[in-house]
Image 1 (cartoon, rainbow, N blue to C red):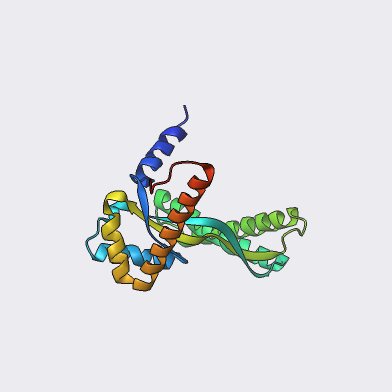
Image 2: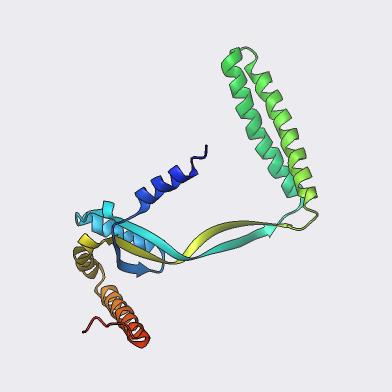
Length: 194
């Protein structure tokens, strides 16, 4: 029996808002976080707020060239840590007699295993990825949403935090409403002005 539908329903319940409305959009997560923190400081019900990142993209920063030596050293160091962990587990169950020789032997075995395993993994790529990098998924913009029942107070607080941004957000919302009304009129639908 799969629990995925149950987990999906749980997440939807936890992440969902009733009729979410925008309090503002931000260019960075730090700006959106600052806005929510400001709301929290003003006793706004932040449990009814969410930050949504949109226009996701993956950014990968190349850090340097990858060589066989770097791979082996990385595997060696990783193996040493695994050896320390295994040695400590053995010490917990076998007592502290001969702790130092046991730790040294598990570290040595871990180092050899880690170096060989890393080297084999690197060789299996056939040189198709001879660089190291770090990557992260980031959003192009972050929108702060809240439930409809708090939107007026939230927008007032956002205007207090940054009046210029609040004016820009109001202009953006007005433009979106005007565009939506124009599209309805072009399709022959009823307009909200009638």
